[in-house]
Figure (cartoon, rainbow, N blue to C red):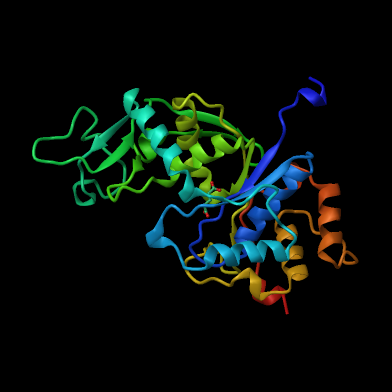
Length: 298
Ligand code: GLU
């Protein structure tokens, strides 16, 4: 295949506006950008704002400002996931019609504590219950895929989650479906994100297949923890990355990705240039990596 026949590379960064971008988000943004750009691809930002109860007012704008302070700007107008509801509904309808999704009448209290759905409503909602959510009917098989950083993966969604929710009882579209539809519509070819989303990937690939679409390729970046090995997250008020000088924060993010530029690359531009020139997925650690923002950045 010559280079003109290769499909164009499209990467993305897809934060949920549930708080400030933290250091782990910067690592995901940087990794997805470097992977796309090092292959002459484009990179887009999608704000995953489909869960209003979890949204923090103004967070999306602050996230975009923070990205811009690192020179990270979407190559296309920023996508708001909430505006794609019609496409989510079309995908839902087609899964229902094909028998690959079904209505479920179970409340949380009626489900086992381990969170694995036992299939109660697979063949119809039991007497006396009303339809609440919609679940994906999982094929009864394992799913294997190659992660370009973490290697070959084999997952068993039937044992890990069971038939999972794609439309919630409150009517909101669940992350698993929205992310698949949106990546497909945008034509995303490379999903590069944190390793915490690895366990969702098998389910997402099965959704791609059920909808008749080709899944993108996947890279899961090392999980970033604080010095005590605790995972960073947007919602528990971890250190916002915007608090630190961008040049220092970017250096730490590139270090976490196994691509720390030499000390004389001081500006953001020179750090990006160095990382782009040297970017190789096999230099990215599988993780987890502990990075102490407080200690390392004065
Ligand atoms: N919106 C998700 C998050 O902020 C990421 C989704 C994805 O990259 O697939 O954790």
